[in-house]
Image (cartoon, rainbow, N blue to C red):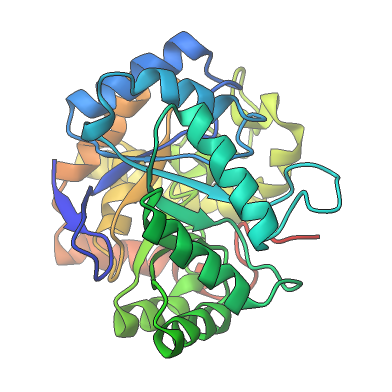
Length: 324
Protein backbone atom coordinates (compact mmCIF):
# COMPACT_ATOMS: atom_id res chain seq x y z
CA UNK A 1 0.00 0.00 0.00
CA UNK A 2 1.08 3.55 -0.66
CA UNK A 3 0.52 6.25 1.96
CA UNK A 4 0.23 10.00 1.70
CA UNK A 5 -0.06 12.88 4.13
CA UNK A 6 -3.58 14.15 4.60
CA UNK A 7 -3.24 17.73 3.43
CA UNK A 8 -0.64 19.61 5.44
CA UNK A 9 -1.23 17.45 8.51
CA UNK A 10 1.24 14.89 9.76
CA UNK A 11 -1.09 11.90 9.53
CA UNK A 12 -0.61 9.43 6.66
CA UNK A 13 -3.53 7.77 4.92
CA UNK A 14 -3.66 4.95 2.42
CA UNK A 15 -3.91 6.02 -1.22
CA UNK A 16 -7.04 3.88 -1.42
CA UNK A 17 -9.61 4.38 1.31
CA UNK A 18 -12.72 2.39 2.20
CA UNK A 19 -16.12 4.01 1.79
CA UNK A 20 -18.88 2.44 3.86
CA UNK A 21 -22.12 3.96 2.61
CA UNK A 22 -23.37 0.48 1.65
CA UNK A 23 -22.70 -1.14 5.03
CA UNK A 24 -25.97 -2.21 6.61
CA UNK A 25 -27.78 -1.60 3.35
CA UNK A 26 -26.40 -3.31 0.24
CA UNK A 27 -23.84 -5.25 2.33
CA UNK A 28 -25.06 -7.04 5.44
CA UNK A 29 -23.24 -6.92 8.77
CA UNK A 30 -21.17 -10.09 8.30
CA UNK A 31 -20.00 -9.15 4.80
CA UNK A 32 -19.23 -5.58 5.88
CA UNK A 33 -17.04 -6.80 8.73
CA UNK A 34 -15.21 -9.14 6.34
CA UNK A 35 -14.58 -6.22 3.99
CA UNK A 36 -13.19 -4.04 6.80
CA UNK A 37 -10.86 -6.81 7.99
CA UNK A 38 -9.65 -7.53 4.47
CA UNK A 39 -9.03 -3.81 3.90
CA UNK A 40 -6.96 -3.54 7.08
CA UNK A 41 -5.05 -6.71 6.23
CA UNK A 42 -4.15 -5.24 2.83
CA UNK A 43 -2.89 -1.96 4.28
CA UNK A 44 -5.95 0.26 3.82
CA UNK A 45 -6.07 2.41 6.93
CA UNK A 46 -8.54 5.14 5.93
CA UNK A 47 -12.16 4.18 6.69
CA UNK A 48 -14.88 6.74 5.98
CA UNK A 49 -18.45 6.75 7.25
CA UNK A 50 -21.15 9.20 8.41
CA UNK A 51 -23.81 9.46 11.05
CA UNK A 52 -26.56 8.96 8.46
CA UNK A 53 -25.23 6.05 6.39
CA UNK A 54 -27.79 3.23 6.34
CA UNK A 55 -29.61 5.06 9.10
CA UNK A 56 -26.91 4.60 11.71
CA UNK A 57 -25.99 1.01 10.82
CA UNK A 58 -22.75 1.81 9.00
CA UNK A 59 -21.18 3.33 12.11
CA UNK A 60 -22.44 0.52 14.33
CA UNK A 61 -21.01 -2.16 12.04
CA UNK A 62 -17.65 -0.41 11.80
CA UNK A 63 -17.54 -0.23 15.57
CA UNK A 64 -17.91 -4.00 15.67
CA UNK A 65 -15.39 -4.55 12.89
CA UNK A 66 -12.71 -2.44 14.59
CA UNK A 67 -12.97 -4.22 17.94
CA UNK A 68 -9.37 -5.08 18.81
CA UNK A 69 -8.09 -3.32 15.69
CA UNK A 70 -8.93 0.34 16.32
CA UNK A 71 -5.28 1.57 16.24
CA UNK A 72 -4.91 0.25 12.67
CA UNK A 73 -7.52 2.64 11.29
CA UNK A 74 -7.63 6.33 10.50
CA UNK A 75 -11.34 6.56 11.18
CA UNK A 76 -13.40 9.34 9.63
CA UNK A 77 -17.04 10.20 10.10
CA UNK A 78 -19.31 13.16 9.33
CA UNK A 79 -22.32 15.12 10.51
CA UNK A 80 -24.35 17.98 9.14
CA UNK A 81 -26.80 16.56 6.63
CA UNK A 82 -30.36 15.82 7.71
CA UNK A 83 -30.38 13.33 10.60
CA UNK A 84 -33.98 13.82 11.70
CA UNK A 85 -36.85 16.22 11.15
CA UNK A 86 -36.55 17.95 14.52
CA UNK A 87 -35.69 21.65 14.79
CA UNK A 88 -32.02 20.84 15.42
CA UNK A 89 -31.80 17.67 13.36
CA UNK A 90 -29.34 19.00 10.77
CA UNK A 91 -26.63 21.55 10.13
CA UNK A 92 -23.37 22.47 11.83
CA UNK A 93 -24.50 24.29 14.96
CA UNK A 94 -22.74 23.53 18.23
CA UNK A 95 -25.98 21.96 19.46
CA UNK A 96 -26.26 19.51 16.55
CA UNK A 97 -22.57 18.67 16.19
CA UNK A 98 -22.01 17.98 19.88
CA UNK A 99 -25.02 15.68 20.02
CA UNK A 100 -24.01 13.83 16.85
CA UNK A 101 -20.36 13.42 17.80
CA UNK A 102 -21.29 11.79 21.11
CA UNK A 103 -23.74 9.45 19.36
CA UNK A 104 -21.20 8.54 16.68
CA UNK A 105 -18.54 7.72 19.27
CA UNK A 106 -20.94 5.31 20.99
CA UNK A 107 -21.87 3.57 17.77
CA UNK A 108 -18.24 3.39 16.63
CA UNK A 109 -17.24 1.97 20.02
CA UNK A 110 -14.36 4.40 20.37
CA UNK A 111 -13.49 7.46 22.43
CA UNK A 112 -12.01 9.44 19.53
CA UNK A 113 -12.45 10.03 15.79
CA UNK A 114 -9.37 10.64 13.68
CA UNK A 115 -11.12 12.90 11.15
CA UNK A 116 -14.43 14.63 11.87
CA UNK A 117 -15.99 16.19 8.78
CA UNK A 118 -18.79 18.68 8.26
CA UNK A 119 -20.95 16.89 5.71
CA UNK A 120 -22.02 20.05 3.91
CA UNK A 121 -21.96 23.83 4.30
CA UNK A 122 -24.63 25.19 6.64
CA UNK A 123 -25.84 28.64 5.49
CA UNK A 124 -27.85 29.10 8.70
CA UNK A 125 -25.00 28.73 11.21
CA UNK A 126 -22.13 31.23 11.48
CA UNK A 127 -18.86 29.61 10.47
CA UNK A 128 -17.33 31.01 13.65
CA UNK A 129 -19.70 28.86 15.71
CA UNK A 130 -18.94 25.71 13.70
CA UNK A 131 -15.18 26.21 13.73
CA UNK A 132 -15.03 27.06 17.44
CA UNK A 133 -17.04 23.90 18.16
CA UNK A 134 -14.65 21.79 16.08
CA UNK A 135 -11.68 23.43 17.79
CA UNK A 136 -13.17 22.44 21.15
CA UNK A 137 -13.62 18.85 19.91
CA UNK A 138 -9.91 18.66 19.09
CA UNK A 139 -8.94 20.22 22.43
CA UNK A 140 -11.08 17.65 24.23
CA UNK A 141 -9.24 14.76 22.55
CA UNK A 142 -12.42 13.37 20.99
CA UNK A 143 -11.36 14.48 17.50
CA UNK A 144 -7.83 14.55 16.07
CA UNK A 145 -8.33 16.38 12.75
CA UNK A 146 -11.21 18.17 11.07
CA UNK A 147 -12.39 18.26 7.49
CA UNK A 148 -15.06 19.72 5.24
CA UNK A 149 -17.28 18.07 2.65
CA UNK A 150 -19.37 19.46 -0.21
CA UNK A 151 -18.09 23.00 0.41
CA UNK A 152 -17.80 25.35 -2.53
CA UNK A 153 -14.31 26.79 -2.96
CA UNK A 154 -15.33 30.19 -1.56
CA UNK A 155 -16.96 28.56 1.48
CA UNK A 156 -13.86 26.52 2.22
CA UNK A 157 -11.57 29.55 1.82
CA UNK A 158 -13.78 31.61 4.13
CA UNK A 159 -13.55 28.86 6.76
CA UNK A 160 -9.76 28.67 6.45
CA UNK A 161 -9.52 32.43 6.77
CA UNK A 162 -11.59 32.47 9.96
CA UNK A 163 -9.55 29.64 11.46
CA UNK A 164 -6.34 31.51 10.72
CA UNK A 165 -7.66 34.77 12.14
CA UNK A 166 -9.08 33.20 15.32
CA UNK A 167 -6.38 30.59 15.88
CA UNK A 168 -8.81 27.70 15.50
CA UNK A 169 -7.96 24.27 14.12
CA UNK A 170 -7.97 24.29 10.30
CA UNK A 171 -9.68 21.93 7.93
CA UNK A 172 -6.98 19.53 6.73
CA UNK A 173 -9.16 17.94 4.06
CA UNK A 174 -12.25 18.35 1.95
CA UNK A 175 -14.41 15.59 0.58
CA UNK A 176 -15.88 16.21 -2.84
CA UNK A 177 -17.34 14.36 -5.80
CA UNK A 178 -14.44 13.92 -8.23
CA UNK A 179 -13.85 11.44 -11.04
CA UNK A 180 -13.39 11.18 -14.78
CA UNK A 181 -17.16 11.80 -14.93
CA UNK A 182 -16.89 14.94 -12.77
CA UNK A 183 -13.82 17.11 -13.13
CA UNK A 184 -15.52 20.31 -11.96
CA UNK A 185 -13.33 20.47 -8.79
CA UNK A 186 -10.36 21.26 -11.05
CA UNK A 187 -11.74 24.70 -11.85
CA UNK A 188 -11.54 26.26 -8.38
CA UNK A 189 -11.30 23.69 -5.60
CA UNK A 190 -8.06 21.97 -6.66
CA UNK A 191 -6.07 25.23 -7.03
CA UNK A 192 -7.36 26.37 -3.64
CA UNK A 193 -6.38 23.10 -1.96
CA UNK A 194 -2.91 23.16 -3.49
CA UNK A 195 -2.40 26.71 -2.29
CA UNK A 196 -3.75 26.13 1.22
CA UNK A 197 -2.41 22.63 1.89
CA UNK A 198 -5.82 20.94 2.06
CA UNK A 199 -6.08 17.30 0.98
CA UNK A 200 -8.87 16.28 -1.37
CA UNK A 201 -10.79 13.10 -0.60
CA UNK A 202 -12.82 12.21 -3.70
CA UNK A 203 -16.13 10.44 -3.25
CA UNK A 204 -17.99 8.76 -6.14
CA UNK A 205 -14.56 8.13 -7.77
CA UNK A 206 -16.21 5.56 -10.05
CA UNK A 207 -19.29 7.73 -10.57
CA UNK A 208 -21.34 5.39 -8.42
CA UNK A 209 -20.10 2.36 -10.33
CA UNK A 210 -20.70 3.73 -13.82
CA UNK A 211 -16.96 3.83 -14.57
CA UNK A 212 -16.60 0.20 -13.48
CA UNK A 213 -18.23 -0.88 -16.74
CA UNK A 214 -21.17 -2.65 -15.10
CA UNK A 215 -23.68 -0.43 -16.89
CA UNK A 216 -24.22 0.06 -20.60
CA UNK A 217 -26.56 1.96 -22.89
CA UNK A 218 -28.35 -1.34 -23.51
CA UNK A 219 -28.66 -2.39 -19.85
CA UNK A 220 -28.80 0.52 -17.45
CA UNK A 221 -29.84 -1.56 -14.44
CA UNK A 222 -28.25 -5.03 -14.33
CA UNK A 223 -29.39 -7.40 -11.58
CA UNK A 224 -28.11 -6.47 -8.13
CA UNK A 225 -26.62 -3.15 -9.25
CA UNK A 226 -27.06 0.11 -7.44
CA UNK A 227 -29.34 1.34 -10.21
CA UNK A 228 -31.68 -1.55 -9.44
CA UNK A 229 -31.57 -1.43 -5.63
CA UNK A 230 -31.67 2.38 -5.40
CA UNK A 231 -34.17 3.81 -7.94
CA UNK A 232 -32.99 7.38 -7.27
CA UNK A 233 -29.59 6.45 -8.71
CA UNK A 234 -31.05 6.34 -12.23
CA UNK A 235 -30.71 10.14 -12.34
CA UNK A 236 -27.01 9.59 -12.93
CA UNK A 237 -27.51 7.26 -15.89
CA UNK A 238 -27.20 9.89 -18.61
CA UNK A 239 -26.07 8.65 -22.00
CA UNK A 240 -22.94 10.86 -21.91
CA UNK A 241 -21.84 9.17 -18.66
CA UNK A 242 -22.35 5.71 -20.12
CA UNK A 243 -20.51 6.71 -23.31
CA UNK A 244 -17.56 7.89 -21.20
CA UNK A 245 -17.58 4.58 -19.31
CA UNK A 246 -17.51 2.70 -22.62
CA UNK A 247 -14.44 4.63 -23.79
CA UNK A 248 -12.68 4.09 -20.46
CA UNK A 249 -13.52 0.38 -20.77
CA UNK A 250 -11.99 0.20 -24.24
CA UNK A 251 -8.77 1.83 -23.04
CA UNK A 252 -8.64 -0.46 -20.01
CA UNK A 253 -8.97 -3.51 -22.26
CA UNK A 254 -6.02 -2.30 -24.34
CA UNK A 255 -3.95 -1.94 -21.15
CA UNK A 256 -5.02 -5.27 -19.69
CA UNK A 257 -6.63 -3.83 -16.54
CA UNK A 258 -10.15 -3.23 -15.29
CA UNK A 259 -11.98 0.05 -15.97
CA UNK A 260 -12.24 0.54 -12.19
CA UNK A 261 -8.51 0.23 -11.62
CA UNK A 262 -7.76 2.57 -14.52
CA UNK A 263 -10.24 5.22 -13.32
CA UNK A 264 -8.95 5.08 -9.75
CA UNK A 265 -5.29 5.20 -10.79
CA UNK A 266 -5.98 8.33 -12.86
CA UNK A 267 -7.64 9.98 -9.87
CA UNK A 268 -4.90 9.02 -7.40
CA UNK A 269 -2.39 10.82 -9.60
CA UNK A 270 -4.32 14.11 -9.63
CA UNK A 271 -2.86 17.08 -7.73
CA UNK A 272 -3.95 17.51 -4.07
CA UNK A 273 -5.69 14.11 -3.89
CA UNK A 274 -4.81 12.43 -0.59
CA UNK A 275 -6.93 9.28 -0.52
CA UNK A 276 -9.65 7.98 -2.81
CA UNK A 277 -12.59 6.37 -1.01
CA UNK A 278 -14.25 3.48 -2.79
CA UNK A 279 -17.14 1.43 -1.50
CA UNK A 280 -17.44 -2.33 -1.69
CA UNK A 281 -20.26 -4.78 -1.11
CA UNK A 282 -18.09 -7.87 -1.66
CA UNK A 283 -14.48 -8.73 -0.84
CA UNK A 284 -13.68 -9.39 -4.51
CA UNK A 285 -14.67 -5.81 -5.39
CA UNK A 286 -12.13 -4.57 -2.87
CA UNK A 287 -9.51 -6.82 -4.43
CA UNK A 288 -10.10 -5.33 -7.88
CA UNK A 289 -9.95 -1.77 -6.54
CA UNK A 290 -6.63 -2.49 -4.82
CA UNK A 291 -5.02 -3.14 -8.21
CA UNK A 292 -5.25 0.59 -8.89
CA UNK A 293 -2.62 1.35 -6.26
CA UNK A 294 0.14 -0.38 -8.17
CA UNK A 295 -1.05 0.63 -11.64
CA UNK A 296 1.44 3.05 -13.18
CA UNK A 297 -0.03 5.18 -15.95
CA UNK A 298 2.30 6.53 -18.62
CA UNK A 299 1.95 10.04 -19.98
CA UNK A 300 0.17 8.85 -23.13
CA UNK A 301 -2.52 7.03 -21.14
CA UNK A 302 -3.08 10.02 -18.86
CA UNK A 303 -3.37 12.25 -21.91
CA UNK A 304 -6.00 9.96 -23.45
CA UNK A 305 -8.02 9.88 -20.24
CA UNK A 306 -7.76 13.65 -19.92
CA UNK A 307 -8.96 14.03 -23.50
CA UNK A 308 -11.99 11.73 -23.32
CA UNK A 309 -13.12 13.30 -20.04
CA UNK A 310 -12.34 16.94 -20.89
CA UNK A 311 -15.99 17.97 -21.28
CA UNK A 312 -16.72 16.75 -17.74
CA UNK A 313 -14.66 19.61 -16.33
CA UNK A 314 -17.50 21.99 -17.08
CA UNK A 315 -21.20 22.07 -16.33
CA UNK A 316 -23.02 20.67 -13.31
CA UNK A 317 -21.24 18.40 -10.78
CA UNK A 318 -22.05 14.71 -10.99
CA UNK A 319 -23.25 14.81 -7.38
CA UNK A 320 -23.42 17.46 -4.69
CA UNK A 321 -25.10 17.14 -1.31
CA UNK A 322 -26.44 20.31 0.27
CA UNK A 323 -28.96 21.17 2.96
CA UNK A 324 -32.47 21.77 1.63
